[in-house]
Amino acid sequence: MADIMITAKEVKGHCAAGLKAGDKVVLRGATISLQESDAVCSFAFANLYPAVFAARLGKDLKELGLTTRTVQCIDPGPPYSEGGTVLFEVKII
Image (tube, rainbow, N blue to C red):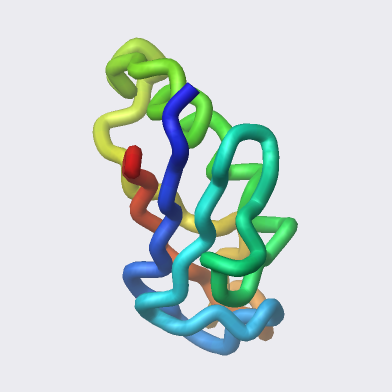
């Protein structure tokens, strides 16, 4: 299984986990590498898992009905919620 880097590309509103553009989360095997990662939002993984597992298994995202390895967090952010939303990029490292 490939290791994965998830990067926060854009933040709109106020992210409850404190993520900022450029923050990274590194997945090595089945674990989050805390030494290599910035802030981690557990809620974001709900939307990230399909892209993470597709990338790890070398699958084409189109097989999952996805067109890119860019994934948005589940909080819609303003004007729909008081929180914020983050756009993530998922890539193999």
